Length: 294
Image (cartoon, rainbow, N blue to C red):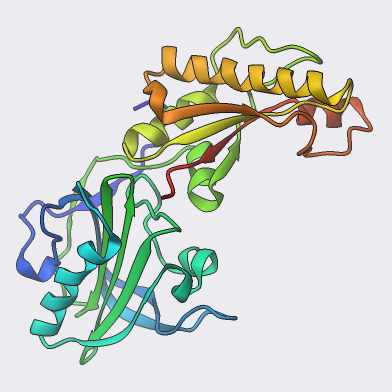
């Protein structure tokens, strides 16, 4: 994929054993194993503040994709049963808003997309302990794709992993979408009243990479204008700007048309005050917003 940094992801070459807590029908996406590290374990909902325990030792984190998944509970339940059968005590478990919603999801340790995707409208978390060992589970469904992250903290004498060159590093657009669900396509710029996009744009390539890495992701492209002119004209221009970016995303980057929509909001969501040429230029933009939340 284009626009990716050369980050290395640590993967084990051996097939997952039962201790790896593989979800039924899941495919391992990333495995990151560190002989001595730490992991923040949530032990209560994040209301009003995070409540965590720092677990130290050998940290092995694996992310999985499960095609055809229906609910986060269906993903998590068999893993919970496996832990209980192995003698683990369930210390804490929660779902979506009862976890603390947005604050909880962005307050826990999560592998960045595309390695892991969390639908903030449907996710579940579990923390379990056996002696000095901890396991946390994070399960989520977006569209018809399930996403599971398992993190095990145990004996620091665990064997070292094998290094693979699989690359899941994100560009700036992907990092912003993963962190907040929205990203300004900073190089997609327009003159006053213009809706033309004649060139190639790195931000659109990064957006296409992000979407290619997770087939469940859909986005809306939202066009904006500065405050010159009336509201009706600016609404029309802003939508044409979003449509121009959508067209490039589909025609040049191969994104399926049904995964991206285009909207315009005129000058009603500015980034700056419209009182200088620089501010007005910043307001003439297109943003990407993740919409694959069911």
